[in-house]
Amino acid sequence: MKNITTVYRPFFTILIVSFLSINNYAQKSGRLIDVNATKETKALFKNLKQLSEQHILFGHQHATEYGHGWSGEEGRSDVKSVTGSHPAVIGVDFSGLSGVPEENMQYTKRQLQKTIADTYDRGGVITVSWHFNNPVSSTNFYWNDSTASPAVRYIIPGGAYHRRYKEILKTVADLANSSKGKDGQLVPMIFRPYHEFDGDWFWWGKSHCTIDEFKTLWRFTVSYLRDSLNVHNFIYAFSPDNRFFTEEQFLERYPGNEWVDMVGMDNYGDFGRDGRYNLEAGYKKLKIVSDYAIKANKLAAFTETGLESIPDTTWWTKTLLKTLQRGDLKLSYVLVWRNDTRSPTHYYAPFPGQVSEKDFIRFYNHPFTLFENDLKKIYK
Image 1 (tube, rainbow, N blue to C red):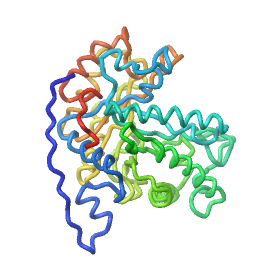
Image 2 (cartoon, rainbow, N blue to C red; image 1 turned 45 degrees about the vertical axis):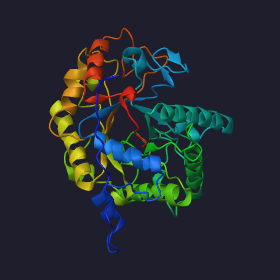
Image 3 (spheres, rainbow, N blue to C red; image 1 turned 60 degrees about the vertical axis):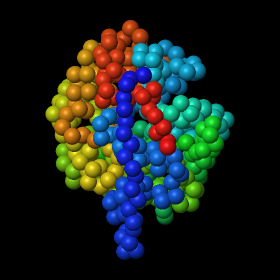
């Protein structure tokens, strides 16, 4: 374990006067949008904010579920095989909670509950993406020009499939409200629905719904989970892809401060995808995200990035770390994508013998980066 001392500042409660809106209060006090959030969820929000002042948590999608050439091995992750520690942030996906046979759904639910609980019990952090199948047409989460339906308009209130969408959200809520650690407490999760909405590759993308439809979808999703289904262990994260250059563009589909706890960005394109590096552009976009979070008193994160196959032997320190430490970015975590079990080339974190392994160890040992073994009482 690295020798890292984290100073937790007192968390002052800001008194609220009657004429302040929920939005203004949340913005000024830095509190969650769910006033009934669990104690552990509030603690995670507070501690992520404080840690982002001097550190960043490292995350990996599906890190403990499977990796390069293996699957379902208790206590294993490719990151741990290299560094001795799991990532601080583990990414899971709610994709299997809808659009699949009931038997498959129940199996997925059990596996998710185990991964979520195990991560919490070890002191790590869970973030959730949601690649769920189009609820209106018989297509998956990707947009298919020939058979897909522009589903958003049909699942928001007043739409023909709104009841179906409420049933899907109930399945999500059931998972959230049954995922508990050994201490009996609900596990806090960073819930990141409808990511990369500024692209066109998902059915919720910008060409498949209007700005107002997207905002309505987001607001209904949050309100129904929080206020009707009593989910109080979510931190709600808003994360477009990298197709913005100004704060105004970043916020084009932003539903409002009263509906978001964390702002982020997915960005592979500026960090080496297809051999293209534009670290200046990548930094400027992260700065927009970070600056807005500071202004609105939200969390900020680099919600997805990575370099497939990691052929660049110094990518971790010369590309990623160099950018993350530049300027005054305040980001709570950075997450790289998954390591596929079967594919020889589809991986985003190193494993023993991979060409960037030594550089990743340097990245791990840097005092700026935090891994699971570095976290102390993040839910207290």
